Length: 545
Image (cartoon, rainbow, N blue to C red; front, top):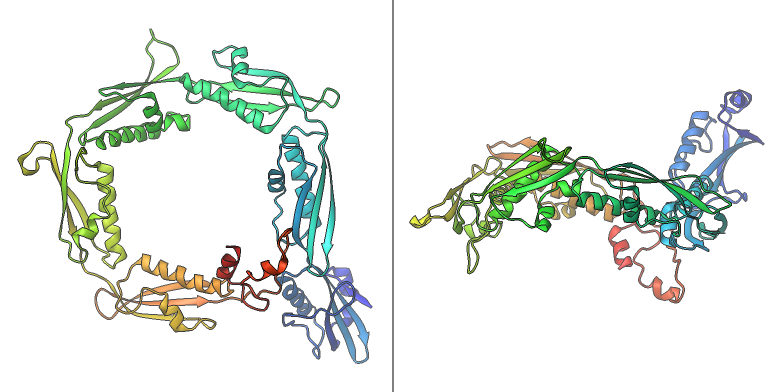
């Protein structure tokens, strides 16, 4: 028997095989049994001359099935030619992955998440070893520096499933050792350490260090140091003392003081309205965002003409040095009432339908209504998008505000002026490339058919609906491409949808695992997928429910 390989020396040695007649081509498993089932058509086949390019193409075709982790090729001389055998090692797939012996933290769920082995993925020894190393790292994060990790494999030959049982001997959990502080603040080391609530009595875990650093940072932010940063790092674990030294690096940054004039806002309201508290920074973009938030806050209360200005400057010489002062000057103005809204120029959509889409709201009992410039812009854009989605590609929507409606001061009335323009419609729709799904079925889920309004949103909806049909029929690699062509008449377009179906994925076998108390027959009756049928996403979802 001659084993073929892909190195230059071996290729020269086996050069005599090339050109010989292939008497038989077989795919065998490692036991020598002939593999049956849905095999791809191989370029290297019986009756043709042996060719290394055809051999490589056959290997690619077998690997593309995804059923094999390794394939060797052997050529055996026979009367009248050579027999070629593809000896394949079939994949096993992760089934049950269990971690035993843990002492939380980490929990079993956290340990499995750290391993990052997906159920149903092909088993690879290298991937398992990487997963075990990630688990060891998670154990060290939890303070288990002396944990021993072993694992056992439980293959199921009949179903090609692989159970992974990981055993953990956690050992002692490390305690906090010495704590060094790199202090770049005006606060004493002991005060920062007290705020962190980290002491040598406590066990080292990631949660302890995370909560400790967040407590110190929160304390500094409350003192006005919005850019404060706290990082706690670990030193080397000492086996004899079972302790880990820590280093806490604390940086306060400049102190920031917020000054509000012209109106009152509580500390809680400021934290909600000003993003500088959440972001821990005070750049100009965040200051302007805070200004807009304060403006919209008062506009929602009826102060529709409120003006908010923001400025930032360093403290003066007679104040605290290194302090940044952010000032918000609020001029609320008069309180208004939104009397109502109207629409002009709308013909395609009724006023009642448009009114239901508005964020602004007219005044009612004990309410001045809802109004702000931000809401007004959003409402105009929402109406414009509605018209665009219905074929009015040149539509325009503007809003005019009358602040003395019916001669009453501070009584607002909003009028939306709509210019609809011409509507573009679909003159014709052609679909090609479909073989598995009939044309009538595709047209039933397409909205951009003859005579319907044309819009990019409508085509995008058609794409989603058609691809969903293909995905549900077992074609996960189906693709969709559209062409938009001018029609014979103005304001008409012709659409062409081009579909590439790809290969169909079928269910080879349905396996039930993980049950303990329920009889498998009861579970099997709820399974919608059938062997030999397409892998439908709808069947998968129904089975899960």
